Length: 403
Image (cartoon, rainbow, N blue to C red; front, side, top):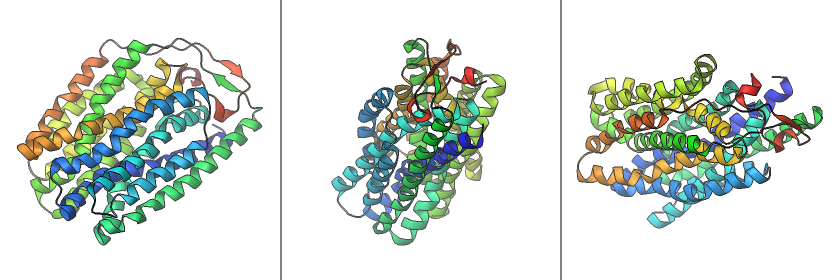
């Protein structure tokens, strides 16, 4: 890619990191809610649900809107909304206010992802590797969340949570710069980009969505409770739990880039299917393997869950070539939010039995996801036709076209 085309992707990736910090911080705050406010597991997981429930409801709406219109102004606005919601979540002892603030942050995250994925696809030409770099930004944000929360809330308590708004301010500036850069690249190239054509394959897309939901429930369940669980298993206090959550998120950053490169060599569906098999074994290790070896299992789980992350996005976009915004909203945003809907059930089971017993059902979900992937075929998209729209206003060519 040329320098002008690289710049929007780099800026969008960095902005993505600043937004997805707030998906990671919700889970990272759970141990502090338990410690400072004596929340039960079910109450603490209700905070995760708050971030997910409203987000799940509005995510398809934002996807549909971006299918009709380019909304570049939504990127900085949604980033600030996500940061403000999470930052306000710790300033009061009111459980209802905490839920409301976290829910507002979830709406910000929901508003960001469909438009950001559409803009990234347009700027990057839709290649696996380029979308992998965009997804890497989000996963890096997840990875930075536990140390950020540990540094801010661990040092100053939940009352220091307003400081967590800083990444949102930085992200809003980066998103604004990305929009201006992409618009400039469109004018420099004569304002014409490839417009996807083809037929939407809803049956394949729905099966893919089912698999991603299974992946999401595992990821959110572990994100919510792995910190507390590892502290129980190996001791070491809050630091031990923070390290486990950091490993879960950091491994995702590595796995996302690896997934794009592996897909370019071996094909998307083959890589996705194998990653689900790895996830079954790795999650079983997290739940059943004793002692410090649990950290290795967490790392393998992270790889299994994240290698297909960017591939889910591009597959979804290619199964619905006429509804790229909707596909992006579902594969990149909605399915992550839906995973949060299961968190209270995991928390309630943990209160009734133990964390280990509550996490055990998560082992089966990647296997269900793998079954849903059976029979899916690589989407075939026809050659694009030119359009006079600017680069930030229309989806770019499909992955196959980019190669």
